[in-house]
Picture 1: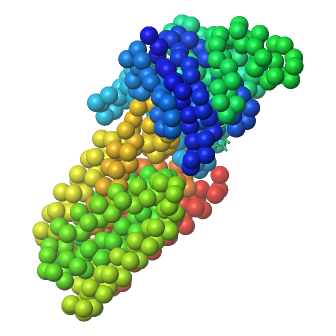
Picture 2 (picture 1 turned 90 degrees about the horizontal axis):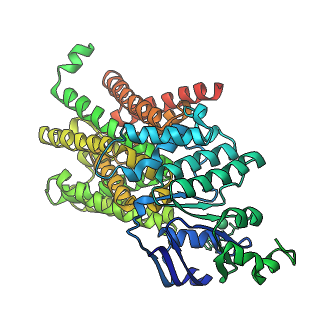
Picture 3 (picture 1 turned 135 degrees about the vertical axis):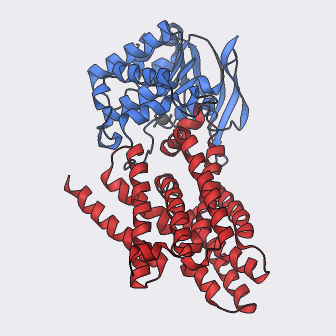
Length: 235
Length: 268
Ligand SMILES: Nc1ncnc2c1ncn2[C@@H]1O[C@H](COP(=O)(O)OP(=O)(O)OP(=O)(O)O)[C@@H](O)[C@H]1O
Ligand SMILES: [Mg+2]
């Protein structure tokens, strides 16, 4: 049974179609990498999967009893107000919001999860620091820690390594793979790093205003789509 | 005249109790409204509130009973408008608020004329608070405070990053509506003392002052609440002794506090 399924899904802004013909389904535990040029509709698809944007055509369906409260999400460089007064601890803890259920307060378990994810991201020393006083890469780690707090079954990441230094980016890929394998979390990640994509992901979705390729990473390496994308070079 | 004598007046006791509670509500909600770039909504609502109060007094209806529901409906409407990308949200707010003000003024001039009651709606008066108004105000503002505190984690998340909250399964429309309803109630309650023209400063000033000096959301909320209540008491006491208008005195107290916070904040 698929955990998430797109059938001929298409998306438009103000009547202008930006993405169409998306057909794929993922099983629990899969790791999908979404690739494509700038403006090819990757972020739009992510928003579609999250229910932030309604498909104009086709359907996006959750299966396997997946609920939206079991999803973690890292947005692509949000326009979070630059002057927003919030400490790193508060931002990360807000990722536990979807575990509140009927409760009004975060409990010890939530706080423990927030602390653990801050440790994973190496930002536990920044807990009391103001979010807007951080560098871009540090902010990215904070938002990742928040996304991990929210994740129970599915993790969607829109360009998670943007702004991270090479060492941190490598650690990030390893960490995401670890979450995927050990916690059995389904991962959908947008990335421009095609080499990392085929190395870590189980499946690749290649977009360019429409679906150009969907299949396993091994199939993708042999595909025309990959060859064209890399300008004739093989991976 | 001493403070003790001042406190022996029933209207002063009422004004201080209701005022402090309403100031706390305004400050707490103000932090979210300012951060969500909704500060104009407070201003718009107060003008609609004026229109509603003017019509209510022309028709000899209970002012709060008319104004509270009308302003709540407007608040929900304004929120929808400012969220939809198709309409220019801020322009719509300006249109609605000045129309409501105009209708209110016409309605008043056709019936009772511009009497002291109307001027008290415009600029506020601590004398205007009747005993039943005061009781209702205390109940409503306690309800606003309780709801804010109960939903604090959700309101924080929705304020900080609405699309993340929505994507991870939080019903953001519900909490935005809650915010709008609480704001509407607070604006109407505050209008009697502050006046339609000055109430939005009660929402905006403490939040801005607190944001100058605090680094976390919790600290900003607590600090704004303290500043708001403090400035209300200072302004009211000053207006009593100096015989200046209450609402205006409170705004000036908030302005001075904002100046001090800006100086403190810019040092580091
Ligand atoms: N809010 C919006 N309103 C109108 N058009 C939009 C909006 N967001 C995206 N678009 C359009 O949709 C298309 C796809 O955008 P999208 O953000 O999905 O691209 P992307 O693949 O994520 O690109 P990038 O690699 O730069 O992140 C673009 O042509 C863009 O102009
Ligand atoms: Mg994108």
